[in-house]
Image (tube, rainbow, N blue to C red; front, side, top):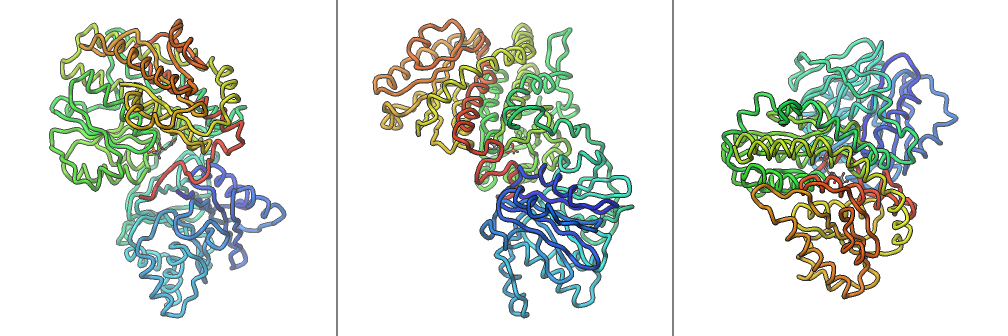
Length: 621
Ligand code: F6R
């Protein structure tokens, strides 16, 4: 939710700020702006809409500055119009903000009573006024920021400049991500590391309530009382090359195709090949908590929640521990029943989703061991969790999550197998077979990607339908939810995921010849341990549900397993997956539903990587 960047150094910052904003645009893209400081005054450029508008505005501008800040917005307070775009300049101060200042109305009333004119509808401008007001009373820039911050309620990351200190950028964080990038005679402040990776891979992550004061040659981190604190400089392993599209039309398509590699990178290092056993290296000493637990809560949002639902099947089947799955936004406020011998697992691609972070803080405050599954190293979730298992999927830039989902699923699979081993609920032959199956999955995914041409054709055929159901049973049901989410978020078509058995309890009323039902019905080469008939029963019941749809003239796109002529004959479109076990099939099924959504979106001409109203990192509640 909003991307922010700051630069102070020796180069003219226009191109740097714009390039960084391009990398941050996934965080919000309804307006954008930059401000620089030259000759003792600010130059502020803002534009409604996408970054291209700002680029066009700046094309012929010759800036003489060596310092600047920038912002790409996802509107919370105030419509996405130029007046509400950041940076907000007030007197001797200009700032950009990510987050929500919840008590802004209270401050606004006092500022107006003091005769200040507020130009925008944002909470952010109020903070610029508060700092400027302090400075007008004679307080120095850094001190003024330090005095204002404790008066703010809510979440924020700020990057601020002042005409009084023309080389200095002040950054401050509480609840929204912010880091300092350390270059050669230059410093950066950014919402995430991708923004600055072209120039430096050395970063310091700010903690909540910390401030940073940056000049080209040094930075200092201060705590809430203004006392300098030590900070660890981290070296980032991602490279700037990983952030490009490398020939793909969209990041989403690239990321779909990257899944075999993302899965390999996530799995490798966690398999002891000689004993054919999974031992997740990131678990380290946290592993001892797994022995004592008797119940698991999985908490996440959106696509990560769908991975969590798959995790429920894995953990319950492999370790026989009860698992509940919660939306993070619900978990926090429902006073969940948590005991010290429970395990809470928080899943997040970005590691910055505020709902998930808040839920984890709630669980931690109750003394429950908290494990994160996360894709972004040293993100807030990863740093605050008791332990983090990383999905090594590489940077995910398309707003619609794809490779992070299958990588999260692979981690949950491995974790469940390891828990099954620890809780002695799997025989040796069973966990060895499960280990072999996950190792083979990236190769199977390569095969599934070969379906793309046929998926493209179907996308062209069905793009004008307006209503889609996705149905599956058992472990395929979370993929139905994920398929529907993918379609609706990037095509804006109406799509719903259901357990197939639920169709007849209401939704079937909608089925007609202009409704498409995606039936996720692979056969399984193996069954859940101790449950040898499950897959067969699910398949047979799904076939019955498919007949119910057909009887009402509904169109059917089916994803099944190769050589399944029964399903192929009944479906209008049939895609065959290679044969795999019940627990691997969800990862394979994900690819056709992602590709279908992608190609429909492409045909409809929506903005695939930056769908309307969405942002990749949701740092507001
Ligand atoms: C959907 C999507 C979102 C995210 C959700 C959680 O494609 O990307 O639903 O999954 O906002 O984000 P993370 O995983 O970063 O916590």
